[in-house]
Image (tube, rainbow, N blue to C red; front, top):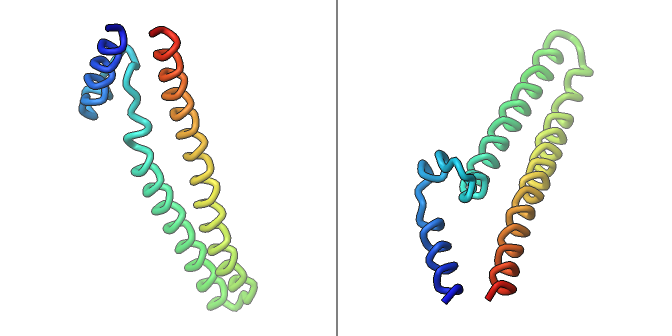
Length: 113
C-alpha cells in the first residue's frame, strides 16, 4: 500500500506545470531539468555572438593595417567550440546530480516497502 501512495505522489509532482514548480516553496519539484535545454541554447547564442564580435574585431584590425588582427578569426572559432564544450560538460554534471537524486529516491522507496 505504501508503494501506491509513493506512485501517486510521483504522478502528482510530475504533473506540475512550470509555474507551479517555480513557486513550489517546498522545493519538492525542480525546474532546472526543465530549463536545461533553454540554458544550453542561450549559451550557444552567447558564444556565437562573442565569436562573431571577435571575428569582426579581427577584420577591423586587419583593415586598419594590423595583420595580427586576422589571428582573432581562428581564436574566435576556438573560443566558440571550447565555450560550448565546457558549457555542455557543466550542464551534464548538473543533470548527473538530478539523476542521482532520482535514483536515490527510487532506492529509498524500495527500501521502505
